[in-house]
Amino acid sequence: MSEPPLFPLPAVCNRCGRNCQPGTADPKARMLRISETSDGYCLDCAVTEWLRITPPICYMLGVHPQAGKWQQQEQKSWDHMTRGEDRRGPEMLLNEQVREQFGAVMRGGFAQASIANINWRWIVENWAIPFPPQRKEADRA
Ligand SMILES: [Zn+2]
Figure 1 (cartoon, rainbow, N blue to C red):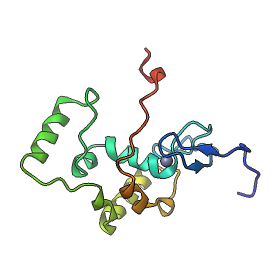
Figure 2 (cartoon, protein in one colour):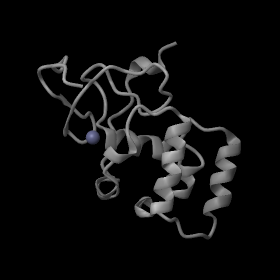
Figure 3 (tube, rainbow, N blue to C red):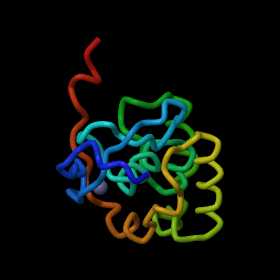
């Protein structure tokens, strides 16, 4: 913990532009793994991205899954769950019980980040900040 940072210059979040600190990634972590490079998101933006793309919580939050990335069954679930119903929106993340459930998901995914470091108020207030376009490398076969 007291070792000097590997990167003398702070990294900047690709989404919100806040400073964040790369570190040593835990290979066992299946979600919210710390980036080893300066290319990535801060914790709050990483949590936001996870919430926006992971069924079923993205349905509960009223986020339409990204076109083309989802199975037909998931699209049906989305249509079913949103028909004639109010979408709950990201404000539900301020609910203690919802956050406790997310904590359980983090433990199950061996998340490297600590839930105590997540700023839920910031996440809700900055929910609409767009994510940068996905990098082309990910699409190359
Ligand atoms: Zn960020």
